[in-house]
Amino acid sequence: MKVDFHIHTCYSDGSLTPEEIVRRYKNEGYSEIAITDHDTIDGVGEALLCGSKMGLAVVPGIEIAAIDANNVETHILGHYIDIENEELRARLEDLRAARKERNKKLIICLAEQGYPLTYAELLIGKRGDYVGKPDFGRAMVRKGYIKEAHEVFKPGKFLETTEAKSIKKEKISTNEAIRLIKGAGGRAVLAHPIQIKGFGEAGSDEYFDRIEAYVKVLAEKGLDGIEAYHPDQSDEQAVRFAMLAEKLGLAVTRGSDFHGDDIKRRKRN
Image (cartoon, rainbow, N blue to C red):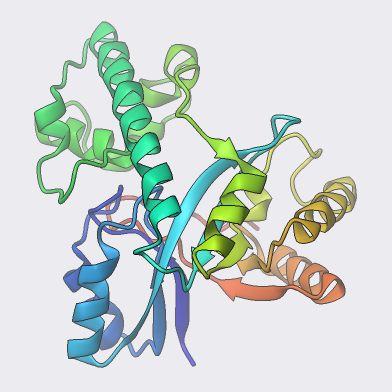
């Protein structure tokens, strides 16, 4: 089976509609995909309908940004969730309001750098009102400030200045993220673990020792799996994550973290 359990649509910070995603993956011979937009489930229903029409299994999902008591920041994927779950939907509304305030601050920050944008310009081509950082890149391309959307993440510039990076989006606790996903009948998976900061050099033996201890705690809280296969993780790292999952009795998932062809990911060696 050919699967991808980490995909973003234009309902969060991806560039393609759910229908475009489903058609693309169907044409590429995939058997099953998961729609995992950031902190929103608004596009899942549309994707499920398109999947049913086109004959592609679509998993209802989400990606939730989280932080624990030690300020360790992670992303938790939820697969097979009930998108009608009232507690989940209510909490996502809280995050929606906080995200809008964060984005207003980022607009001011970019204007101070000489790159004025309006909120309406960030919403061009989108469905719903979610705005993520890749959307800033796309808007800046349309304004002629940069040539490609991924340039917005250029070190020391745009959204990577000290001022912009200090503007944080609200995150819920890691335990709450897992609880919300499980409460909605879903499977909680640790996304792209190589991105977790503060555990030493990424991919080192020290790093994997600390990741193992960390994941053990998450498993006790209900974590179901690890995204072992992700573009930011080398083949060697993927194998080590898969072995860790097997050791702890957790599922292994694979995801592209696809946001669109204009936001490129580069596999680490």
